[in-house]
Amino acid sequence: MKTRKRSNAPVFWGLFGAGGMLAALFGPMLVFITGVAVPLGLILPAGAMDYPKMLAFSQNFIGKGFIFAVISLFMWHAAHRIFHSLHEIGIHAGFGCKLLTYGVALVGTVVSAVVLLGIGF
Amino acid sequence: MSEQKVIEIEVLRYLPESDQAPRSEVYKVPFTDDMSVLQGAQYIKDHFDGSLTFRWSCRMAICGSCGMMINGIPKLSCETFIRDYYPNRITIEALANFPIEKDLVVDLSGFIEKLEAIQPYIIPKEPRTVEQGEYIQTPAQFAEYIQFTSCINCTLCYAACPQVGLNPEFIGPAAIALAHRYNMDSRDGGQAQRMELLASEDGVYNCSAVGYCSEVCPKHVDPGNAVNINKINAAKDYFLRFLSPKGGAK
Amino acid sequence: MDGWWKKNPFYVEYMVHEATALFVAAYAIVLLVGLVRLGQGLEAWTGWLEAMKSPLSIVFHLALLVAIAYHALTWFKLFPLTMPPIVVNGKRVEPNVVVSTGWTAAIIASLALLGIVWRIAA
Image 1 (tube, rainbow over the protein chains, first blue to last red):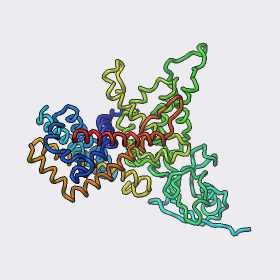
Image 2: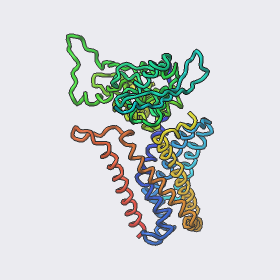
Image 3: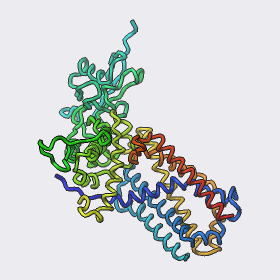
């Protein structure tokens, strides 16, 4: 019988699933808050995302964790789907595709971690 | 008496002795309202061209041999009725994602290998002797896997699965559903052996949850669900193998 | 296999919901830029906030909103396919109940998020 290699997909599939779940639960509302409500001054109190508030939020453990999870997991989720979609539309450029998808997600994860640590506690 | 209705059936023909590539041929088939697409094909074979080749047996959606692409959708031709297409033309082709052997007959050897590979039989947890008696199973344990026993190996799900088309090595929906059927059986102890295959690069992670396999399944096996449940199982096996004393699949 | 996904409306819908990933990625990049600007201090952050007010940005975010809402819709719609069956009191929960529970959870999570942001902001 043919010997088969164990797939490392669980790592990427797990990140994809976690990011997909997070995006499904909070994605639309996050976009609404940061991209529509706050810029247009709708619903939320004025200055909801002003510097002192956002700084405090990003220095708080929970806030830091939430920002990190949203940015990194959204990126891993998207990377996984886009990588598969590229394969599905006939672009199988192995390493290049991985760099463009998972590579970008990795960079995004590292950058957000560095910035969040730099902001302090 | 009403006038005899006639439908155009376009058939994808391929005779390996004479054809370089598959070609289409259109036949005008008189039909009655009780005629299936399979009967339409039989009419063509009996009246127009005896060389037309296709598989069929039971004519009642249980043998699983008459699957074909009907207007681009994988269906059992015995339970698909001509009247539902009239007055439009019906196009019938060999099942997608399989090599064509002749006309509507596809080469299933790859599928058979996959079926064998998942060990579709009970691998007893503890073998029992005749004296020890039968394996006892409760209705609740039976309910765990009964749905996945309904597969008739018609391979419509393979024709529906773009990932099978993109990677012919992918074990695919029906074989994984059958692996799941045995894994879920309380008498079976072969999970670790099957996991080697399910967790491999030809395994469950080839699936991107398109879900069309379950949509076309004539027996409501829901093979897509079996594949996706095993993504979770394979992930557990992947991460927990370091904790388990026996280790997971290699 | 070229163009396989154009051959069936079922596949087209699949490709559309897969394509929401592009919007999720775009939004993550918007947030990442915001986070970097936040790390650079008051002036940089205020600049980012101002940029978010441009009409182009608003339109872009409305598009993101639609796409990511479609992601949420389809994500839970696939649950009967992607998740193990849920059994309550020995009975399998109906697929449509699973889906609507997911949608309800998303609505509750969204309102909770809005509420929390409101409290922090006030």
